Amino acid sequence: MRKTKQRQVVLDIVRSTDAHPTADWVYEQARKVIPNISLGTVYRLLGRLQEEGLVVQLEAGSRKSRFDGQPGPHQHIVCERCGRIADVPDVVDRAATERIEQLTGYRVSTHRVEWFGLCPKCQE
Amino acid sequence: MRKTKQRQVVLDIVRSTDAHPTADWVYEQARKVIPNISLGTVYRLLGRLQEEGLVVQLEAGSRKSRFDGQPGPHQHIVCERCGRIADVPDVVDRAATERIEQLTGYRVSTHRVEWFGLCPKCQE
DNA sequence: ATGAGAATAGTATTCGTTCCTATTTTCACA
DNA sequence: TGTGAAAATAGGAACGAATACTATTCTCAT
Ligand SMILES: [Mn+2]
Ligand SMILES: [Mn+2]
Ligand SMILES: [Zn+2]
Ligand SMILES: [Zn+2]
Image (cartoon, rainbow over all chains, first blue to last red; front, side):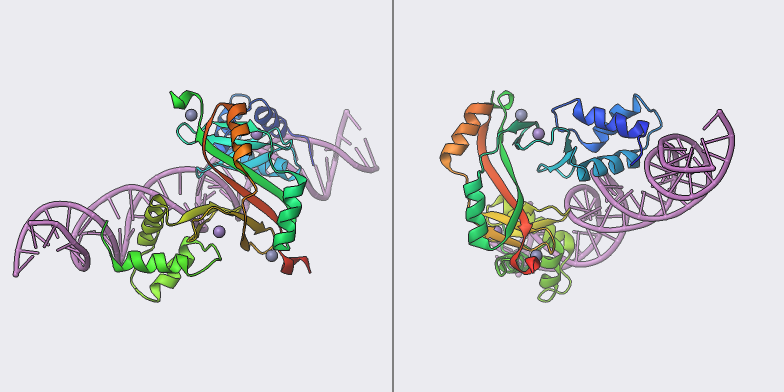
């Protein structure tokens, strides 16, 4: 794994926000620093950073992936009107996980919770 | 809303299985009954059936949507090796929902839980 | 039976993402 | 510090799930 300017810039950008940006938002930001960086590079780096556990990829209703530079254990709530994604604590505990394993026979490795609703602004 | 043969066939098919099929699997099955049904029609009908609450659309890791003809409240566990999706009961209760609403200020309308792991067969 | 308009078939198009490859860049090692 | 092998990138082509378009067919209230 080589240290390239592209890798550092992409990582910095995805860590700089809690808005859970799309790949092309990251791309646009990165172009401000490396004008000729390519979108393919952004995708490849985001994918690799995810494999390394530094970035998490979300699927939030829309067809575009969104990326999270804060990979700690937490979950998300998505505004159905404006698309905003906020962080929420995980409400699933060890007991629930064990219950699912017993019921299904699956060995659980991870889980994901997505809440949907209206953000405070969109309720007005 | 008109009763067409296509609509009835698609609904029957998506209700006939618990495998949470993709749109093109539904399409292939439907062609056995209506050989010249079009894929666009299948997509449109699945979308409309979802709006009516008769079908639920899942996003399970892969980029293809999968559809569930059993719309009752339940959740899913996805095998990370073979892609099989099984039903599981919902472990999120009213208290957890209220806690999320208080913490975020969002008005929650729904939630989704996805478990990931290895199915019994793939553990061998 | 008929006509308005809802729905479909067939096809083109969109667009997020992945793939390809010639060129550039990194870095272990001399 | 110089060199070379291999890793990474830029730019563009390709892919594919899903949607859009439209002439035609079908449904059903009247
Ligand atoms: Mn987050
Ligand atoms: Mn199900
Ligand atoms: Zn909102
Ligand atoms: Zn499996």
